[in-house]
Picture 1 (cartoon, rainbow, N blue to C red):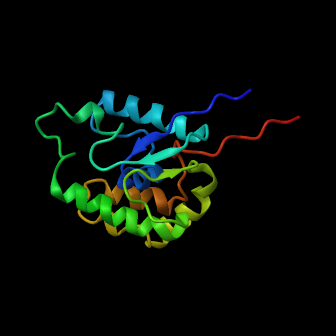
Picture 2 (cartoon, rainbow, N blue to C red; picture 1 turned 90 degrees about the vertical axis):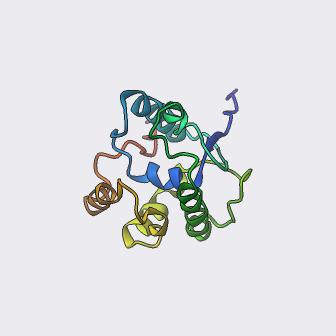
Length: 151
């Protein structure tokens, strides 16, 4: 019997970031935490949309240059939620639970590459890197659908 996974608390713009994540980040602790979260999502864990800092922010919250509580990041979350809603087929207010992301990856990455999910990325320090990842067909990204087992 499969054990139900607890939802991963994720702010909307980090859902976008997960599409292009290749193991780069602010610090070793940040990358380690992000890698764990990506593994959990790739395994099919559900997602709970949160307002404010999430599991990705956790390693940065005590740093002096932490931007996780800034108004511009809250704007980024609102914009990401608005852009993601049509692709996911529902609005994404805080508290929304999604069954996971793996089944949505092809549609989300296509929309990201087309630019329809990029309004929230305006002014982001990682924007150019994400452009490169999308142009390369998302090669090297860590969020991959699980490989089906051979019976």
